[in-house]
Image (cartoon, rainbow, N blue to C red; front, side, top):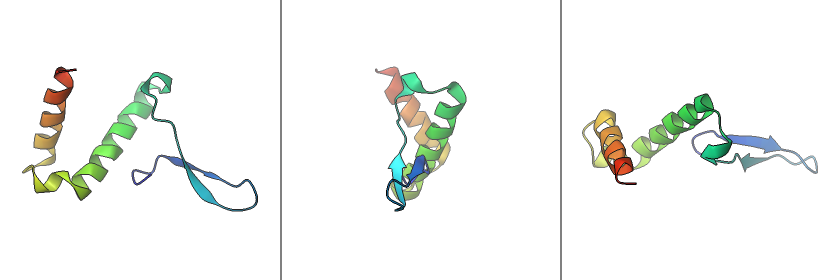
Length: 69
């Protein structure tokens, strides 16, 4: 939700945020890239900046982890 990937739903005139699906199989490449970038920004702002000197270093670590999968 923090990354901004949600839709507003108004079933009873009320307004709340409904998270969008993060099923990568259902996303276009551009949508995935946007979600990845926005999610990394949130992670950087709340967690990663404490453990990595730069965003590039954090992305490099994520890339290395994904190579193990």
